[in-house]
Amino acid sequence: MKDKEILKTIGSNIRKIREMRGLSQQQLAIKAGHDSASARSWISKIESGTRSTYTNELAAIAVALDVPPSFLYIEFENNTTNLEERILAYSVLINDMQSKTPISEG
Image 1 (tube, one colour):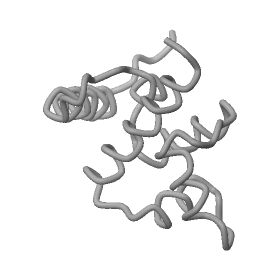
Image 2 (spheres, rainbow, N blue to C red):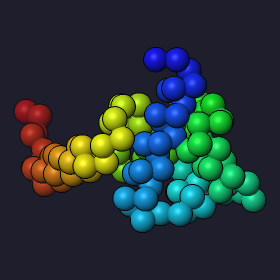
Image 3 (cartoon, one colour):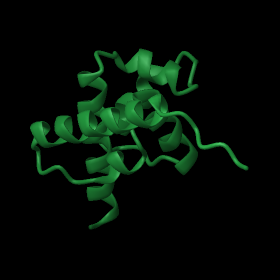
Image 4 (tube, one colour):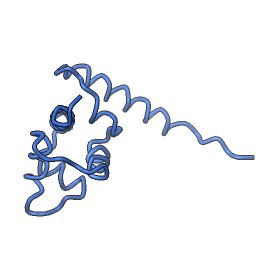
């Protein structure tokens, strides 16, 4: 996959997940730690695939969206249902892991 295609995939996934989460571009940018006058523009450029991002920026966006960073890179072939199913499965897995009592060392 070429760099431009990767940027488009990442941007498209961010937009889809952001919309699924009911967040505006401004809200996502702020949750990702980009609290400035250009915050909405920053996310807009990433979602459109016209701005490259640093790994730490993508990690912050993934945390803000409550998904693993790998979900930003996966090509979902414009299949939003597949993406929603993966996010739901991930959420169930995380909730299950958090509800379990930690194993004590001993």
